Amino acid sequence: MTIQHRTVHAADSESRLDRWFRRHFPQVTQGALQKMLRTGQIRVDGKRAEASTRLERGQEVRIPPLPEGPAPEPNLRDRQVSEEDARALEKMVLYRDDDVIALNKPHGLPVQGGPNIRKHLDGMLDALRFEAEDRPKLVHRLDRDTSGVLLLARNARAASRLASAFRGRDAEKTYWAVVVGQPQFQGGRIDMRLAKQGGPRGERIVPAEGRDGAHAITEFNTVDVARRHATWLELKPLTGRTHQLRVHCASALECPILGDGKYGGQAAHLEGMSHALHLHARSIRVPHPEGGSLEVTAPLPPHMLESFTFLGFEKPRSPPPRRQP
Image 1 (tube, one colour):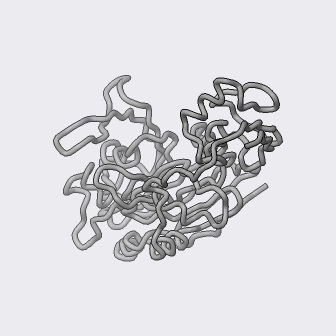
Image 2 (cartoon, helix red, strand yellow):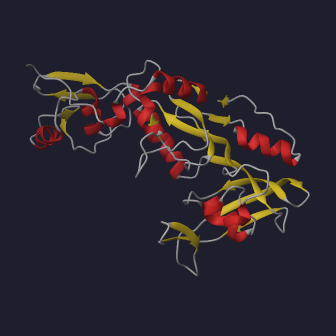
Image 3 (cartoon, one colour):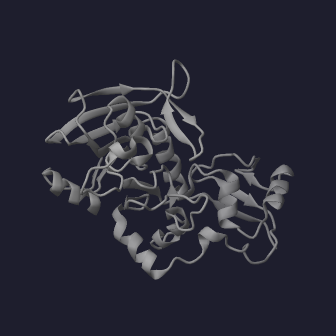
């Protein structure tokens, strides 16, 4: 066993030291890693470092003699993905480069696990490595029943920069929704605070009074109307609250999203039409981790395409992804 020195590559830039170490040396336990950091055996550019130290490209990490042995047993999310699921995931890919993957997530697929959820996107991301060393990472979320554009980061640097873009509201997200009824105004801005509320059927989001709750803002615009029975809306959330668009449509516009029984009850359903949620993350424009911007558009899911035909809405075309310098 000897001392090693490793140079940080571009793909690992902005990684936390502890996470970088565990990726490259998975046989080392968390307790052993903490001890080596505490005693100064692990150093960055010759200096002591903490677990939270952010690495930069070109830095040199000193690695002390390490125990030999196999990597820990994989957890549930690292188990092999079935060929059928792998093929289905690959068909979802709208765009891919060395840093980013954009998917068109289907309606009904959970992004992450939870109670009574056995199959979810996060548990199958190994199928989207495409020969890369790291598995892709989630940088934002979509509700289980919302379809559309979902971005993944392919390395630690991209994950850090994309997450920062979402936190700083530099990501421009556009959703399409079919709502029941017709809003009073053609377009405008909804500014309604939201709060979580428990109940016998589980947690839900409700409008908040006064200064309670979290600030939530949505811009909306009417694209088309079907004989006042339903309206095609373009929605742009300026904040990212849980179920924000669904509550804003149901409570502020008094036009629940078609299929949204949770917030619209029976009023959210129309005879002869799908009961699936008609909310689609149509496009996203975000700063690319390597500079410039990336814009990706997702085609509508089958149930919304059927509803567009039924309601007489013009079927939209989906432009190809664009990366601009």
